[in-house]
Image (cartoon, rainbow, N blue to C red):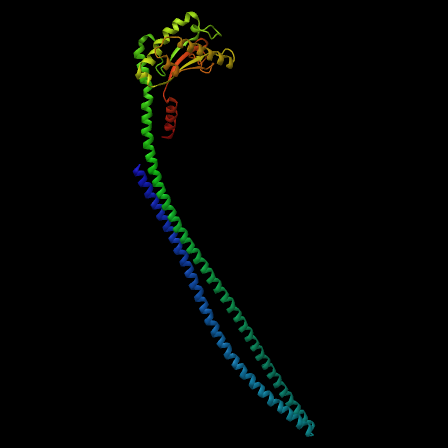
Length: 378
C-alpha cells in the first residue's frame, strides 16, 4: 500500500512538473513573440520616420528652388511686360514701313512663343508644387495611420501583459488548490485506514459473538444426549403436525400430549436451568407451519392457533422456572411461507405440516445486520 502511495505521489509530482514546464514554455514563447513583434514594429516605425524626415527635407529644398524660379519668372515676366508696353508705345509713335512692320510682327510672334513657353514652365512649376503638397499631405496621413497602429500595438501589449498576470495568478491559485486537495487526500487516506482497522476488529468481535450460537447448540446436544434430534445449524427441534393435530384443526390430540411433553420438556428445562445456555437466549419461538392447501390467510390463522396451542400446553407443564419461560416464549404462525421441499424442489405436503421450536440469541438480529454491512464495506 505504501509503495502504491509513493508511486502515486511520484507520478503526481512528475505530472505536475511536466504541466508547470509546459506552462512556463508557453509563457516564455508568448513573451518572446510579443517582444519580437514589438521590436520589429518599433524598428519599422523608426525607418519610416527617418524616410519621412528625409523626404520632407528633400521636398522642402525643391520647394525653395521652385520658389526662386517662380520669383525669377515673375521678374522676367515683368520685364517682358515692360518691353511689350515699350513696343506698343513705339508702334504707336512710329510709322514704320510694311517690311519693318512684318519684321516687327515676326519679332512679336517670337516673343509671344517665348512668353507661351514661359507660361508652360510656370504651369509646370505650379503642377510640381501642387504634387509636392499632395505628397506632403499623403505622407502626413501615413504618419497618422502609423501612429494609430503603434498605439493599437501598445494597447494590445498592455492587454496581453494583463492576461499574462491573470494567468500567473490562476496558476498560483491552482497550485494552492492542488496542495490543499493533496493534504485532504492524505487526511482521508489516514482516516480510511483507521476505519478499516476498526471495522476488521469489530468484524472479529461479531464473528466471536456468532460463535456463541454454535456453542449453545453443542451444550444442548450434550445435555439432551441422543434422545432428541436437534438441528445442527439453528438448534431447533421439529415436530410433525400429523402427530399433534388432526387435519384442519388447531387443538392438540389427547394421545399426542404425552409424546409432546416427552419431546420438549428436556429441551426447555435444559435452556431454563443451564446458565451457560440461558444467559445467551433472547427468545424461544414456537412456529406453526402448514402446507399450501387452502388460502394464505386461512393457513396463517391455523398455523398461529397451532403454535398457540403448543405454547399453552407448555405453560401447563411443571417447569421450576416458569416465570422465566414467560419472558422468553413467543408463538408465531407462518402459514405456508416456509415449505419443506423434496429432492426435486417440490413441496412435501406432509412434512410441511409441522411445529418448529427455535431460539434467538440476544442481539442476534443486530449482529446479522452489522455483519452484512461489514462484509459489504470491506
